Image 1 (spheres, rainbow, N blue to C red):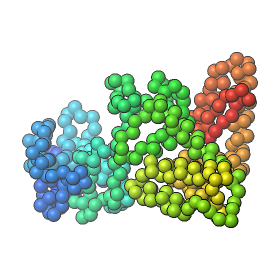
Image 2 (image 1 turned 180 degrees about the vertical axis):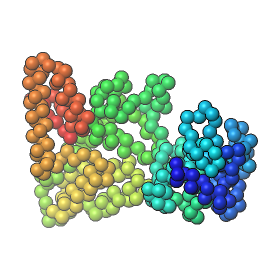
Image 3 (image 1 turned 135 degrees about the vertical axis):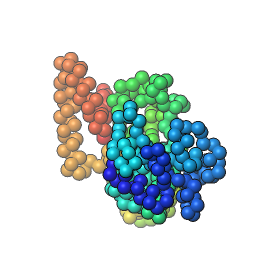
Image 4 (image 1 turned 180 degrees about the horizontal axis):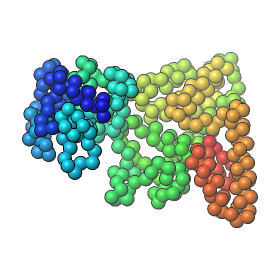
Length: 360
């Protein structure tokens, strides 16, 4: 609160804000008169903003319709209230974000994220506040994500068309036929660009599960590939295509397409239809590992050589044994609990004729 009061006072002192009836407003007209451009982030014209402003509560206190509150005078019924030079009140929605980012990240930081619905007015106001206070933009790069829908419809509690992240993982929902491991959920989400609408459905999750499994199965073949004296595939160019995809505004769908291309290379070499040198095999493995596990953050199910993974596998096998014993004793509640808690940790059990296997 102290930092927000100080920011508000600074904006008043520099001519970017004014007090009115115990409230303080940012002066958009004064901001533009001083050579700055309110609307630059959202590509909006200031005259259109003035013309389209609705008649909202408190408009009669403002110099201009588009001015926004930095500090609001608290009514007697308002729970949140703090003392300030302008009387008891509370900070505006936009100001608190500028105060927090300035305190913890400095006057300028690299990446600011948020939903597309926040671009205007919230993020536009953050830009104006930062530039008015410090003379430069507070953010170097903005990342605005699009909406998430389910079964082609907007998520809404009122219609019942919504799901919580853990409900996807545990399977405790009525929309999906089974639970999906966290890696599968992440893989599904990454197949849409962050600025595109993402629609999740049972079919989409099943397709993602198959695709992810296919990718991982190909990756596991790499240690079995036989090196040749020459390469018939251009691995260096393919690697560059992976970098180009991520350098193009984090284009994860294109990157995933390139990773599937890498998986195709693996299968071609494994089938003896193409050849790779030992150096290119290593480059292929390093590139897939780097992008799949480090960049996209998908769990490495294939790295079974590390001591840590061996220990984890041993613990999971022990829990599978306990689960089998519980099932034999008809203690299905304990059996399901072990399965669900492992799934919540990203470890998926698969029951088959030859016993229970797992992936993580």
